[in-house]
Length: 252
Image (cartoon, rainbow, N blue to C red):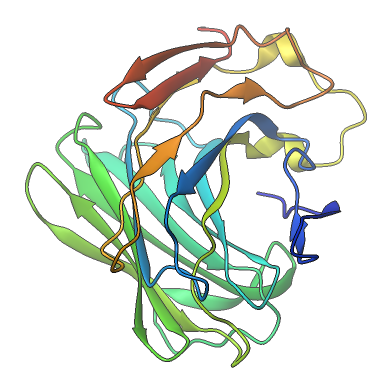
């Protein structure tokens, strides 16, 4: 994973990170929550599944969000990984890239991508990758936030992690980016082997919130955002329940 580096100005003059700076960022789009309060959302839920993804590490199916008052991002998402004890393993992530973020959570550690922030992660053994998961981000008190992974089939909740943001931080802004990342390509190589990208796909559903008055949410179709590999990664997508199933890469 690589943090967003480029900045752009929006109408409010708030500076936000932009899409497509990581060499491993392959596909991207925007989610949006209508009627978001001026001080931001107090929670957001991102539906996600990866039933056909290969059980190998390398991909990160990422939902990113910005906290009002900071201009900086947080991430949550799923990463496929190798099986363990003949069972499928889901890797759930919840991170802050905001300087001054603190944590005392056992699932978290200081730093994010060699920079400021906090990174939290959990791995759980699951019957299969077929289940729909909800990545739930919610404010618990003041500027403290927690991330939870909910299996919508079994209703089992798994705590990913929690952290406390600086006092200037408010709620989550009304929109930001959804990314399919192949993070091995963030190693600084000068040329990307586009025709060797492993195949994958995942479902990114419509975000929801319990914040009073906010909603509905929606998500736009995905696009290719990697300049080196544009039109070279076998990109396709289909629509499902208002969300999208992007796929890319080549089967072995």
